[in-house]
Image (tube, rainbow, N blue to C red; front, side):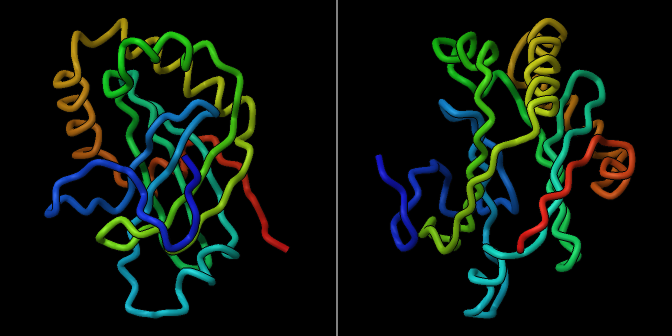
Length: 173
């Protein structure tokens, strides 16, 4: 399947469920979805070129993928629930070594407005997978992980996670 600007992204969600951010595994590592809440028609082009930092924070065997757009003062902490990966794909994904991250900016109706591809730092990708293995050993199912995510988010905000997490800067030129 080829995804391009102007096409519909195949992410499944209900009409009322427009999240600010979401991480989903792919064969090469992760797709990260951001929904465009800006009123500016120029925002997608600016988003494609904006400097960003990314990284990982983990607590209670829950990895949070961190994405920070410092010039825009927008930061995201995206929890990863490994029970959301199908059981048939989970083992291969956790053993994988690929690090390609696709970042998508979507309209509320899932039209791709902008996209970026980057190769994540290998140590961050490795740590994400390691915490994922621990998560599967610690929690019995998807709902137990969701409850733990809620508890962490009740105690920590995104900026606190970024301050304590491992971050990598990606500067656009």
